[in-house]
Length: 277
Length: 279
Image (cartoon, rainbow over all chains, first blue to last red):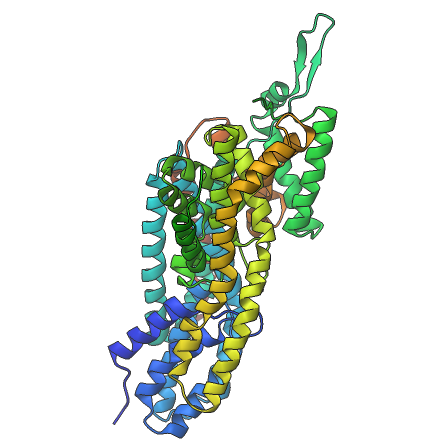
């Protein structure tokens, strides 16, 4: 009789992954233990023999790490493959499963990091911060609800897509449609981030040139804003981008450079936060 | 503002859930509770001042808007930012008598939070290192075919790592933080160079957060245009964020449609060619 994974086992496997993919993280094994926990309910249902169980579980002791939300599709695909193997498919063995996992975790991590962590979350946070202007909890609540619904149902969708479609599930991600979607979303992200920067970041200079009567005849901040509102903010952001993207400096080094810039700026009177008790 | 032991304990628990790798899982833990905006809400509720919490959270959120951890390398620890940095910043604001809504208040919060967040990376590496012990237990269980033990290893034992690296540090720092803030306040007067620098740094740091995000999107000079377009929408035209997202969505749809058309073009051309050959 052909073995078929029950809805219950698949659901347990999905939830183990949804919750546990990174709970026991180490630099050495990363998501490996999360993966083992996700596969365990499936292996227990498919195999009764202890040796077969052990053989199946050993497949998933290989190192695994990817972007966990999008990476759910890989877990779903291996669920389908394991089911095929239990039914005696000749072309599915340790090697096919692990080369699929190893081959996909890199590209999926790349797409997931830029799509989810680099675009979806910042956009949601950008909107949420807009709603929370003035200290209202509304934006934070909005983010909690929208992100979690998106993450939970998105991951569930990916898991079952992977299970039912196998290899076809990732065509969508790496094919022409996926590329068009990525371009569209990254433009959307770019515009929203620009708006977030202009709304929430404010770099201002206090430099003023005074005439003989002590009246300022040049207020640099105003002059700069006449050229392009928020010019100084935009310039600082682009310089930070340049240091990290082109000069390959780490964020912490760039932050240290800003500390020096701030210190020198305060000394020469370029920056003055205007503090007083 | 004083933080009681009970409040410090609650914040410590949230730190366990929120960290990366946290016990809330990444979706609920790291990406929800770990975000400074949400941390601001939680700290605000726990400390009894939601408005200040949210304002401080917003200010710090800009710095960490794109906290990507590729391959498990971190430049800041979310549990430290959200559950040590935010409470201490709230204490500092009330001690200096600054409003969290003012730009000075936001700058103070940002530099406090970032300092704590950077030091907090120690906690991240600490947790990951202790987890190695549990993973060792896990491999033994796999060898002995005691697979049920894997659940304990993956979801139970890491609580001990977090007790050591999340709960205790957060609780102690929150409890003692108020005294430290007082010491800093007497040592560094607000109109001195050190404080002026600190506030200026606070205003500059969000640039790094935005730049980290841009690194993901911008490959060449032309990719700056969407960013600057969004900047102009808000800075020059005064459009708010929700409306700017709608405008951005319009452009995203246009790009998607154009890309799909050009992707299908060779396909269609191919069909046309076949037809000709048949004739």
